[in-house]
Length: 119
Image (tube, rainbow, N blue to C red; front, side, top):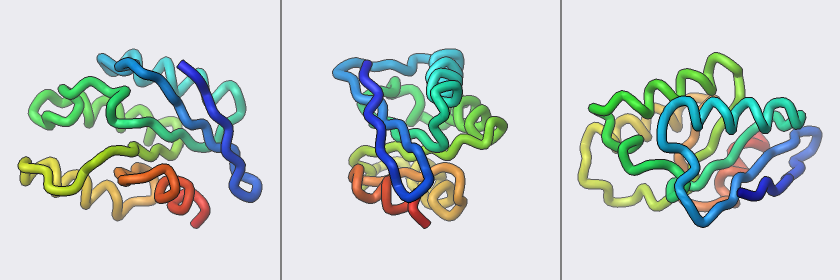
């Protein structure tokens, strides 16, 4: 796992980069959150391929559990992945509602994530 630092104005943004799944459960998500929080990052960018596919099956409850931790710690999060043309209507709706908030974003590119954090 590598943490890449992005700076947008006065905002320090951590991008987690890895070739493997890093988040298998809520505890893994919390550990990453705490790690970047204590390194003085304001926001976090994760790639969808670093999160267990179970996260994207909303009935599992894992997405809600992990994202609640980010809300509680007030750590803004962008998840970068290919979210176009998803078959799950509930996941599409969940992503659309999340993107309306200023806390959690699901985006297609790193540039979109950085742009959302600069608003």
